[in-house]
Image (cartoon, rainbow over all chains, first blue to last red; front, top):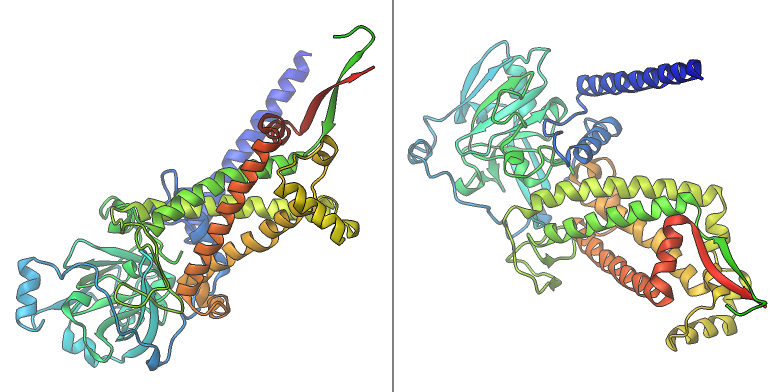
Length: 252
Length: 234
């Protein structure tokens, strides 16, 4: 009887240990392959992780969001909120963004700063895509800009890079994982429907992330930082969005 | 108790474990989906047809609800996806079980005889006259119940999943056909809402019928798997 109890105890302890270390190993492996979103904690973390991991595992990194014909461009393009009301932004705007620079730093070989004219001189991409706001409304517009991948290649991304952080002139900072950062439709857009980006739409340059909800395409860019961890930025959840209750990954 | 009579507690198997567990997991996750879906809808309670739509464009329905932008669509979407995962994985287990165990064929597919005009009209008239099912009828589903369950399992839930995926800009970049077949992202959103309405209608009728048929005994059957009745034999 005593023997059996000990044996049972050994077996259960062994199984529990194997299970626990298996889970730890699985979590580590998932993290290494970029399958765990930075906002994986809390009660909703499991659902968020499943969505993100499944999409990253099952989907092509290069699948293109649908593009449309010019005739499909929406007549109504709503705006959520006014442009930033700080002095820095107003000064840039007064001088037609001539003093504005887009800083690229972090894990790059050549930290750089680009003017608007320099960005406009780079090879550009124009795409007509659908954007849905998380609220439920949507529109189709034409966007022109430099592919983010072009600028990243110019700066020379170091191999340990895992995220690209975007710091704008308003509080809505955000970040992308490398698959979305290298994605051909991810643009640093300076024009909408063939004209310079209007201020409320993110002038001088905004991000365009075609495979995610609208709030991921943040406006008024100022700085791009390549990093291997998001832990020391804000609350460590990868974006301002989770800090106000919205998920970091908006591919849904 | 009269002298000479024998009382026996009759225990009859009703629902197997897989059906019971998946039923309650679906109940919980459907509750989560309903609450969070409503929270998301409140951020923009207008419905459109086609690819795009916004305030300032024509809608097909303006729901009599206020626009609420207090951040509830944030936790709403988190909860919606968590619940959707529970619901879809549960549904997958149920569907695989239903196919392999013949549950669908035996318990849900109507028998050929049940599809005769006389049989159909009798069942419909029983329902219209609010005639409660007899004990024997309780043991298996009538043809209307079978149709309803088949619709819910094979039409409404799959449509919810399809229209849900069709609203995802990441999923449709891989499978554009999901949204193109529906006529656009806003059409998918509208169909998602309408089908959710049908599922709520099903829920209301389902719970009403459970109440009409004996709430305690039917809920007990879905929890324990058995119906118990006391039969008096002479």
